[in-house]
Length: 167
Length: 383
Image (cartoon, rainbow over all chains, first blue to last red; front, side, top):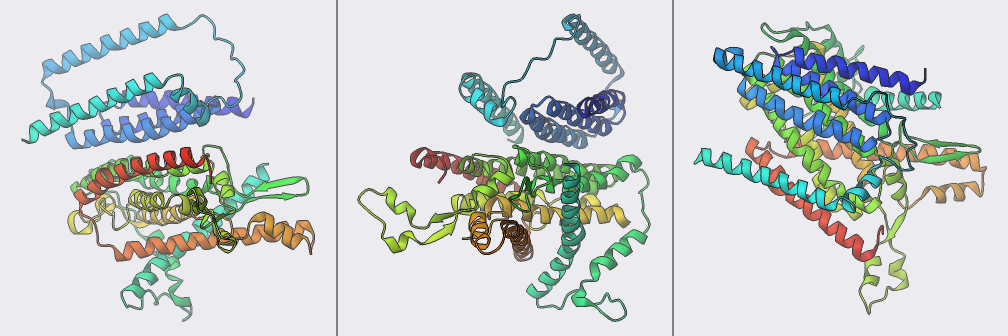
């Protein structure tokens, strides 16, 4: 077994176990968030094995780092407990979660192909920051700008909501 | 070559974790003592020999190792025990991409003195840095102590904020050198610039022969002075040491996130902070101070100059040793600068830390990127 394959199995098992840990740790939100970090980091490892270096680093920096830290921030500030919700609301939440889970599962099963596609040969420089930067700022520049406008809108919206509460 | 990687790793661990980090704790004590007109650490001795207080780091570690390891009642035991490890590991592994010497050719072998040199090296440091925040956050949360929780809340806000400016403030450097690999950056700085070369850009002026011989090292600091200041500020704030020690804040929240830690688990937080000081020094030296390159004396000069008298192999070996020593000298200089700032600046208030990040450093770093881009467009890429 080659090193790449061995590493793939290590990261894949880590990703699956920590993803399960995230779902099953519903009593301890912080442990659940930390499992999410492990999932993100092991996914980054798999991206590295695929040669997508920039995506791997972004995965750790943005998802593993910033976003889950924000989750933790909110979890610690709110310190939610189970009995903060009324029993009726808890039942409704559970039903919604089960329904949503089934929809996602059905969709994934529908998209699953019968056999795995054969991996193609990657062109030179594939996945490097240089190639990705050129692609983003030439072919997809309009989409990048649209996404940044969307984010700007979200920031301004959040600011307006926060300001209204202060005054 | 696994053996080569192993040798480099052992060297890095010995120098950074084994030699520098303990000595930095001594430097901190001695330098603060000099700055405050005290004597400083001078009591720890072996048979009456104190060696300028250099035995204090040893005494510290012995004391920390023999202390009881307390987990407070009501704390989340597992999280409380793994938090110091999460804090210490990123600090130790960050040095993997920092070059401590150049690229040398010995006959058929080429040796690059860096443990790993991916072309996205600097991004690796940022990724490691974003994971390091969890050690602090988890430590505070799992301690079942309000002061700790407040400390970790501050830590998470501060570290997320400064990560943004830390990344943006070195974008100018990426643009100038056109690479993210730290070894490539150091190689690009192994040359000189004409100090008055800019005069030739002005139409109608020409440079006198004498002045055109005045050169300065082509360091990142020369291209990006503002980037240097901003990156140093942001990365020192990431390290959470004074004047950015919001998560600890002894006057407000006791010892912050590590209030409930004792023994060697506290020691791990303490050591990771000092290892980070060394990492920061190495990173600053590599990006802005030319890394291993000797000012006004490029690798080619040394090998050609010494090689004309002795063998090329000897010249290359001499060059290797000189450049590793140069790198270590620069690291020591940057450690000294950090200690100087730590002991001379008063502590920020929490809102001032946030204002500095979002209202001053962030706009400035974006302006810096635009100015650098404009300059590269006008003068052409590179010099």
